[in-house]
Length: 140
Image (cartoon, rainbow, N blue to C red; front, side):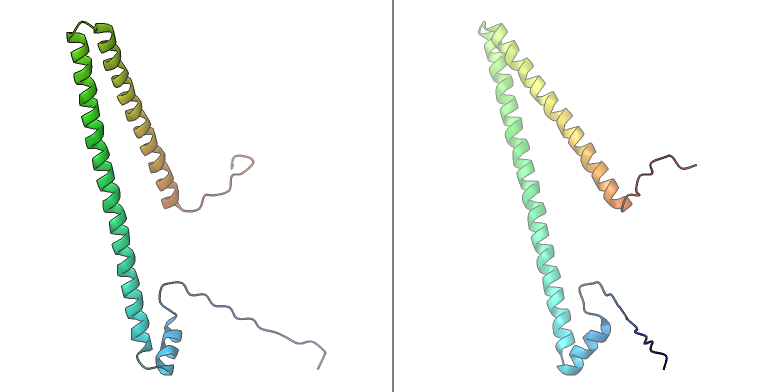
């Protein structure tokens, strides 16, 4: 012997909701039926998670719809009030009310469009994967 020794390190990685197939087989060997129980547990967990996600989506949709109905009702109420003010001889107040409502609606529209654009860009970045590091100089 020359006084040197060698060491070997082995590393493995496994990702996913289920254990590695070899580990699953070991569970089954140690306790018959355990593999099926693990699979059934993961199926129930996935169904539960999907149910919760569906509840969140439906709740968000319901809140958005209710918000639109309320906003539409209030916008109609403001238009009726503005027309009523104009018809009763308070033209300046009625016109100011109608113009301010149009400005608010335009602002909400512009804000909503810019917010949608920002969300689309963020999703596109996520779909593209990790970004490349910026170089201090342009590639040649």
